[in-house]
Image 1 (tube, rainbow, N blue to C red):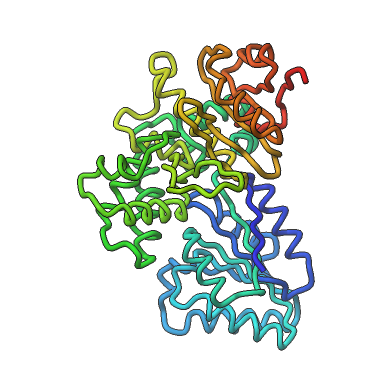
Image 2 (cartoon, one colour):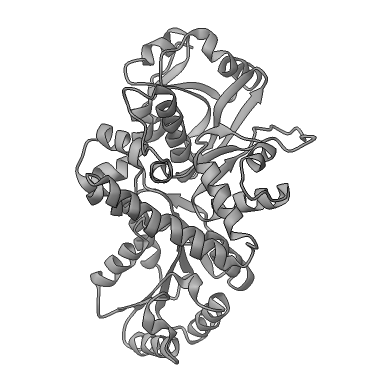
Length: 417
């Protein structure tokens, strides 16, 4: 069984794990996947520190992990501990081990047969490798938790700042917790994002899948996608911007791999029961705005002097926040009308237009037309702080982008019925 629980708050993830680890052991294997540098290792170390006598921690990327017999000794130690008490085995970056899923299945089945009280929690930064391996070998034996990119509210709680400041920071510098202490040194911050996140994700996690024959092209696809935040870009246009052109199928495949690596999502066009005759171009959403700042030659946009670029980054941050928190996000466009995002999930059903500057009723024609055709979706305008009244005057729900990044649509101000 696969549990597709997704969260952006470390406290929420810890709560889910504690609840599941309180169940009789051996329970299902808990697979925690997510981007690099969001706190998966910290989470395992916290679990180990709660009861050091009962926990065993091992990292698959540690030097000792490659020594002969290392993993056999680890499992033997777990069985010895389990003879007298409930035991917790914590496996970090499990996908880096050869045949990890088959090996894990064999040990878990052994524990079940012998009724040994052993819980297993494993993490992985490559969703594709973890998901493929678990489906092939661990069917019925695991639950998956996605530890996604942090939200602005999680950043605010952890670093004791206001939600408004955290929201602004998430637009300009993203939400990687490890980068927080480097925020005042732009050069070090940029190097950290590139060296600790982008390069390992592309150069190690994605390339290790064995499905990338042209690594240089993969990097170019990422660079173009990160340079087009919240833009609808056809594969043909994306292909035309590459120095090393590849087939459209290859470009589409590489976009999919970048999404599995938690870097970029290709948001699809909204469709309600209709079969499209041809694939619509994707809307490119970079899943953490830190990647935008690290890749752009000028860094983050100037708040006072680059309104257009800032607006694109605000829209990207809002859509990424919804995706990271497990919502299904699409977009709608029928020339000349367009809706920035159609959101479905635990937040409800919303048609969303993001307006980071002044706007009039004519600027909301797409939102109004979509809502007329699809009344199940509540129309919502995400505005700059202080402009909510404009949308309310037009009879639409409204929320500032700061409040949206802080709590989703929960604090929306409703327009008249």
